[in-house]
Image 1 (tube, rainbow, N blue to C red):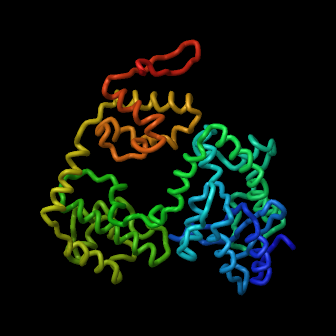
Image 2 (spheres, one colour; image 1 turned 135 degrees about the horizontal axis):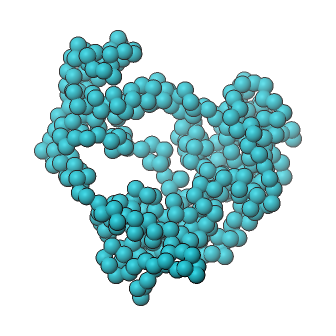
Image 3 (cartoon, helix red, strand yellow; image 1 turned 45 degrees about the vertical axis):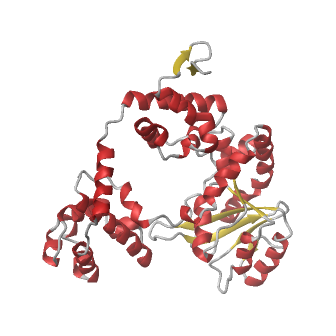
Length: 389
């Protein structure tokens, strides 16, 4: 079978072969600089015996048979850095590929560092050097060059043999269950369809006023939906600074809207979207419960976090990461250390649950409670925990 699949008939034939495999490797090439949704340009797949490029842009192409492969519970789908690839397939057919295995996540679990690259995985386990010189190609243009196709196929060619090596390390370290937990995050639809009413939390605004915060919440959710409808990047619709300006000023007329610095130019005041923004702001109101919730959030933000405590937790994380040979990023994100320092056992962060709690979270609580400490080992040239029972 030729490696370039550009008709439905060729794809259906390939998928019949893939359905008989226990493991396949999958990757995608896409562009999203000018769109909200990633534009799928190429799918690469390997079954260990052959490597193939599937052209989703070919005239008359129908990906239905490949979607069935992705959904087949008997075929394990290997990815490297799977999140964006899975997001693409989820957007296309509203189904998440399953089961999946992400070699980047596995690399972090076995201690190869944060966000380990595919090139590094291949080099470490297979002693093969591959390059990424075609990484920034325009994958939407046709025809693709031989160099592009060769580069694309390389992204799946080594994935199955690398996976076999990684799986052996996971089993040796008794961390297969850790990987299972991590893959559940990738298989959760909420990972790719976040709660729109929580997106405002990512925007830094300096105010304690509940009505302003509620307005920002509503506008941020509206921007996300508007960007999805228009299929444009969210910040090309309204920048974060403009959202803050709108929430603070709360214009309730088109004249007031146009007077704002962030809205004085551009297309919004000139069409129905401008009026839509004004109407949204007019209709924002607070229930007593919401007012209390926003006030509670602002009080929590006002609490001063002991920077010394956060730094001690960072050193502890570094020590645990080195001792357990697990990438620090997958154990606990830097911003979560502040939550642990401020809220202790009540911190709603991954490090307070499951295997992360076993290797780090419980020590973090002991550290902030003064039950253990850290010291520098001059012989080993690293931080160690002291006072452990």
